[in-house]
Image (tube, rainbow, N blue to C red):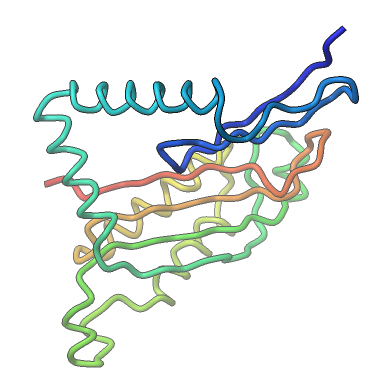
Length: 192
């Protein structure tokens, strides 16, 4: 009888490596390179490229516009920790818990880099305050709503910010299992 083998494919290369875990001592994992697994990965990569090419000029243009935003200058805030009362369960609203927030805010930082003047940029502390006020403020049922409030408030207050990414982590979740956190991540772009 053969054992069960679980495999994960690495998402970041055109030739993903297989990482396999054998759940039975009698069935060794397949070799990481060569053989059928390498050719299957190559075929999948070709199919993905063909599908991307077949999406048409409009899809390519939209992806290109989003890529420009992602590659531009940005302010970065990582690991902001606050206590909040967000969640669907009554005990989450009553007792509250820790939330960890990451924010990226895209804007042109060239003027600030040249002038070395705070008036040519957005202060990190202002974005920090927005995140703090949302997380420590009125209760939301969903993390999606917490993230959306931070993103909307940031874009509304600072017209020079063209886009914002907000990640909300909930490290202490009532889930049976080992995990670092559960959460959401959203990206919002200023409407033209």
